[in-house]
Amino acid sequence: MYFDEIGAEEFVMLDEGFVHSRIFKRLTEASDTHPKILFQTSNPETLKNVLRDGVGMSFITALALTQNATGLKQIDVLDVDMPTFDIYLLSRDRAEVGPMSQAILRVIRDEWQC
Image (cartoon, rainbow, N blue to C red; front, side, top):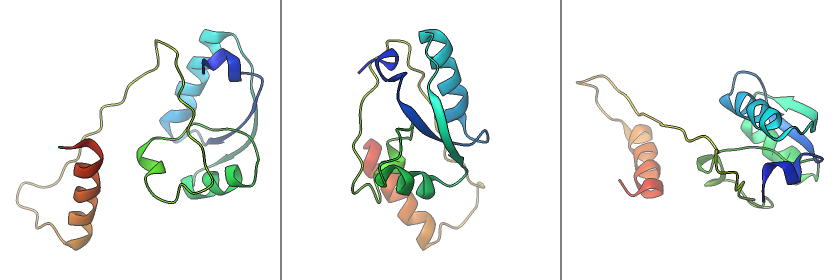
C-alpha cells in the first residue's frame, strides 16, 4: 500500500522522542496528505495495545513486532523513497555479556541472520 492511500486514516503514534514521528511528517509532506493523529505515547507496548483495541493505524519497527504482536497486522508501505535505518549495537570493549544481553543478541542474530 502506498502512503498516500492511507493518508485519510487516523493514526496512533509514538511521541516526538522517536524517529517515527519525523519520518511520518516527511511522508505526509511528500504525499501531500494530512492524517489525523488521535493519540501519542512514549511506550511501544501501549501503542500496540491501543491498536489492538481498534484505534487507528501506526508506524512501528519490524523488531517491535517480533514479540507480543498477536492481534496486529503488518501492512508494507510501498513508497520508493521509504527511509532505511542503520542500527548499531555497541558495548564496552571489555564488557562481560550477561544472560539478558546474550538473550538480546540472540534475538538480533535470529532476526537479521548475522
